[in-house]
Length: 584
Image 1 (cartoon, one colour):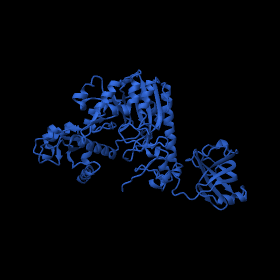
Image 2 (cartoon, helix red, strand yellow; image 1 turned 90 degrees about the vertical axis):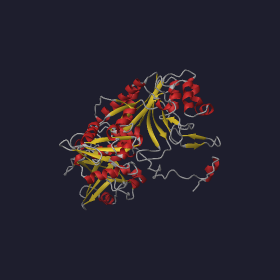
Image 3 (cartoon, helix red, strand yellow; image 1 turned 90 degrees about the horizontal axis):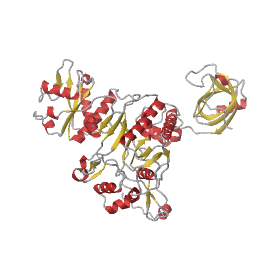
Image 4 (cartoon, helix red, strand yellow; image 1 turned 135 degrees about the vertical axis):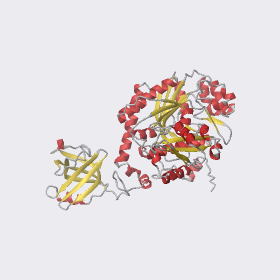
């Protein structure tokens, strides 16, 4: 065998033991009469010593040729270090080498394989296999493994069965574009990669599996951003004979289990918040409730005072920034510039200082007196020493803008402590969303979501008012899971598809297999899917998912390491009966 011990295993208790180690050269120090080499593997680092008085000369000469990242095997005796290193787990010992084998030489890596590296993100992505050798990335992948194992343990203990579902499926409209795969054996036809295993897990419920889960890859051809990958991993779950409360209870339990086992944190409260309240108080459907700064709607206290900006606005809304009265005018101007950025899109910002003596100073003092400003402070719950930031405009846009400002300010104020965990259920989402460009409704979640009991009739008279039997689990301002009670009745599913604009023929062509299955005794069922990548990142104290994925894509959806996607050979295109027509 190549090794008797790992490079992180040896302690003082192993002194005088002969061992064989294998790993990568971290660094070497040549003092002429003595050479020290740090050898590294997944488990840690051990210091090797080559001593001209105790090591064969040929081995010494061989050791002088070692460079960074050489792969070596050594045999030697564990001895006590004369200068111990308390920062290393193996810092009490070193290995006096008696034999050295160079298993593979290495060229100088393009960046240092250290916790703090000199490699930028692009170069580290290109050489990801080297980046994985670094402790931060290696430990993130080990951390992800631990989370996955705890998920499997909890769900298995709850009698869930892990079932694999196909990757080559039929393209169905579920919200995002599909990645498609041509079929050579079925000329001109294509598979699609699943956006989620949605229809399959429903069919498993029809099949009587009762409780299903799967840690599964999903694929969506969406426009990318920093925290989104074209392929991502879900903890996908479904249960039969359940109502919403049953599902919320099970997955509160899973979240508690993970926080306790992974982070050592006990969380008891999982508050429930209506979607409408989340939008009104926080401006988004995944509010971070680790801190306050709730929205105060100010229309009643700001309009009809000859200030046209507010009078013309659909919504005037503000937040109180704790201690913000200490901001200089220059700092406030920078905040105004921040909300004017294209990424936020506000036209400007009105502010009001809440002075320690109970007076107020606003950027619109010309239009509002102290009594008016006191009402602003009351509505936003601003206290002495705070700053009220106010935006106005179209309701949906201004809520999104103020939400972005709230999160930015909370980050600057240190209110988003990654060691504090604040879960939240957001419930009663709208069933449908209106596409303002087309004037048509589409499903907010997916076409298989059930409306709240008793609201089906509203689909004809007031479709925008129908609430979905749907729920999202939010953790620290991130949606980590979402699901719904599903439609299990063929006629109700047909009605839903009709309201989404499907003709009877289109509905049968796209979803006939599922609707036919409902005729054979489909039980009431529902489920939830966690985003594993994001969940792991949050549990790991971060909000970006990339370093918790072994081989991620960049923001353009490219794998720069293997240079994918790529053009394929003309012969392959011919076999697949595909002709390219690329317009440049």
